[in-house]
Length: 171
Image (tube, rainbow, N blue to C red; front, side):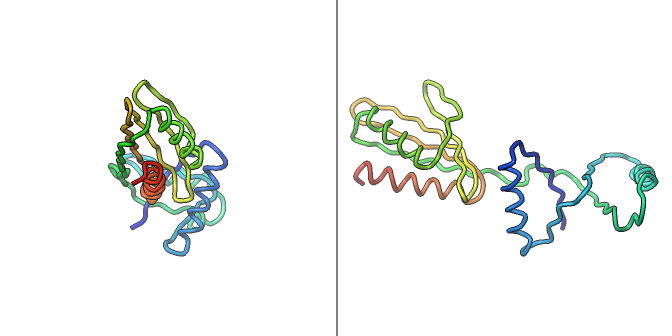
């Protein structure tokens, strides 16, 4: 079965990541990135629309037009989420400094915070994910990482964070 996927990107870097993915998948699937335009239309009269479209094009219509039936998938892929929790026998300030160091090492970009949690976005070779960090403590610290994203990025980041926090906590 074929799928038509509309991808909106905001930066040239995103476009390049999509192009890289298409190159990567070209050996595993039929991947087409059409020249021209992609049209999605919902109508009771597709034949009428196609006749008008064909009348506006020059040359061999068979070479220029491919028509597929499509229906939106409700949610094609569910995001993946991992939660990591640690109790560390250090002051909250010390733990937060280590977490800041760890997140900078992962090239995490802050995306916002509130009195309870700090949010970050991370792009790795395995994909993009978000990280929410909640740190509480008085004497010892309780830290919660909520990592959410798609594909291998979530497990990759969770494993890296887990390894570093266990070393820091002395587990």
